Length: 231
Image (cartoon, one colour):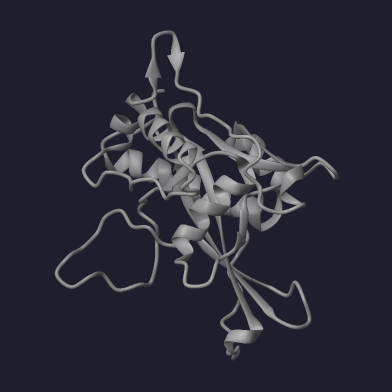
């Protein structure tokens, strides 16, 4: 992977925001593990590339926001991916977790004078074909967006990748049309590209989020007994 400048954490700050002056959002890095690719979005009006993200709905968990926004903005269904993320959160009583679902990074963004925007970034993967088909059936019944079942606790990444194996190739995740929910999202198109290409096209903190998520995947593979990825 090409070397690039790592984005370092900002210094701690002490700020106070009431509920009517803070907008909370979540974004997601969606990987297709079997081919080492990641979903990025392109705004067809400006040709700007970005990772899917957006504001959480009232009473919605940010983990759900990440999954929903990933689908709405990119057209790809996803589920969060437990990784050996370095974090400062306490472990549940009596349970030391090797893989966790925690934000890879958080960004405070001054997008407007009236409020502060706080964005959580998560790692995710495209869903297996059987889950895709099941969710398609649910969608056709008119129930709307449904969160996919979680990544199985006892499954390794190698076992997950084998689910996408096909004779002569691998299962290609489906990109859905018309998943956007507002006028801007109608112009967004999701596409799968290599990790290296995503980092080049995104730049800045988004590239750093991709890099950190990818390093987490590589570390989990190694911890599961794969010194190198053999495809």
